[in-house]
Amino acid sequence: MKQFANKVIDRRSLLSGGVALVGGTSIAGVVDPNSALAQSSNQDTNSAPSASLQSHSMDNMITVGDVDNEANGFDPTELLTDWETGTVSIDENGKTLRTFEVEAIDKDIEIAPGILFPAWTFGGRIPGPTLRATEGERLRIIFKNNGSRPHSMHFHGIHHASVDGISPASGLIEPGDEFVYEFNATPFGCHLYHCHAFPLRHHMHKGMYGTFIIDPDPEKHPDERDVALSRKLGTPQNDEWQELVMVMNAFDTSFDGENEFYAVNTVAHHYMKHPIAIDKSRPVRVYLVNVTEFDPINSFHLHANFFDYYDHGTTLTPTLRTVDTIMQCQAQRGILEFSFKDHEPGKYMFHAHQSEFAELGWMAMFEVGEA
Ligand SMILES: [Cu+2]
Figure 1 (cartoon, rainbow, N blue to C red):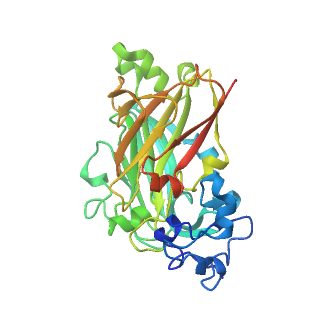
Figure 2: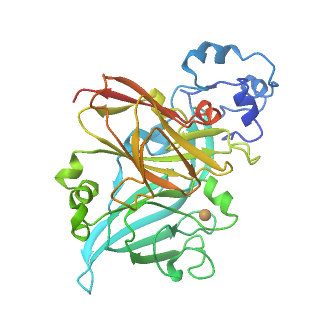
Figure 3: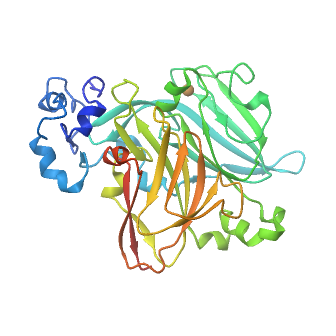
């Protein structure tokens, strides 16, 4: 029997330091409402932190141990560079047709050690697959709903109402049904897709979202061809870059309309425990998307460095230069570019600059080293 975290761990008790989460054993039964863990979570904000928290307080983390990546079916480290490029063919008009297949499926995801979240997912993972295409291509997304609820796919991009993923036009796709979304890949940029079933906030916070990247077609941008080439997956110019996709998300495990856990790519503190390896000689490009529900904004702050920012990724020149913090509301996204080439090797932190989010899981490290 699985025991979920609802009614056991709330945001207030996590922030008060009343509970430490310890993984490493099987997920089932970790949060028994009668357990010491559950009882400690009911301490008020003035009470002393538990012994287990104190023993780990130097890590500034509420989570101890790791989640079971195998059971989750994904490793947040691999997810950073996991581009889903679909299958390419030529359609009847001689145009490049890129086809993706995406499945909705219910799945329990361990979002912090010992904390199972009963998620609704695209592709059995959160965030869903990072769909990547090139500007101007015809895209066909075959969506199969194998979940228990009606869902849809709503893409941020330019397309007709009939494929917008909202009812009544393209409707909700009932469990067991399939729908094909088809449109042209435009505009280039860093976008997202998500389920648009109502109540929307419920379907969003349950995990139904993913990144949707449209690389610029260099031939369409003669004046900025080199930049466009560097953004187009698979070119030698693109290979120079270390590209990473980061989705800022959060989970309301007690279903009280407040998030208890924050992360990039779902698992709280994952990149603190597994810093992201960076070759200091090569530039870094982050595709950053915010899908956080319940909080009006999220943010990204880079330590000891500054970056250029491309709002929505829809330009080839930065929309902000030399900043170290960026703020995004839900569905806002952009591209960050920076370099550690003149830095000494070491661990460089990045995190939400809402301190509360950082403490609840959205805190991470780059491990900068020589090639
Ligand atoms: Cu949905």
